[in-house]
Length: 179
Ligand code: HEM
Image (cartoon, rainbow, N blue to C red):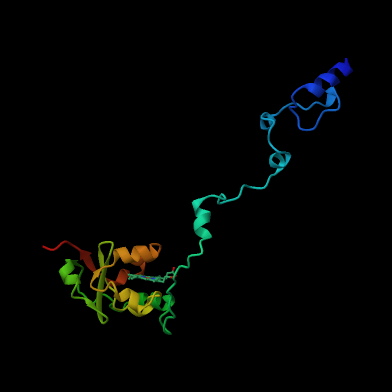
């Protein structure tokens, strides 16, 4: 009887990867083995899959050789983010206006100088004059949006920056369409 099984198992399609030596050691097929085609190393390897996957777009962009330009500048002494936080908390008038206003683009446009700069971000108009020297991206970059709506440039540069919190005491009003 045992020899019959041995000869039968020898010619049957193999469902276990290691050939059984006797009928008592024949392993039962499990869910993970039922296709019978996977390599031993694949089934036993507990290492997590590569992430991002080798062919993912995420990996492709991370390994790109294109250099991204960083234009962070050295701030003058006394103009660190902490200094700006202190100035904000000092109670000094950073708005330069008595009350919040409705500001059309034509009015915004008048405040386009280094010593009188307003800019709109997400519908809110800020007097950025005092902040200019504190801007980590440099005065030149920030002055590009003086007297106009800077939302697009702002979000394309650093959408993660919370301008509302940083410029709260500089708020002068809200951008409205021309009357
Ligand atoms: C008043 C509104 C703005 C505020 C409060 C602000 C604030 C900041 C802050 C906090 C950083 C440092 C970001 C970081 O380290 O991750 C930064 C960097 C920078 N900002 Fe602004 N920003 C303003 C407007 C703008 C605008 C309108 C431009 C472009 C015209 C600009 C261009 C840059 C650049 C080029 C950097 C350096 C980015 C880098 O790390 O490579 N910023 N800004």
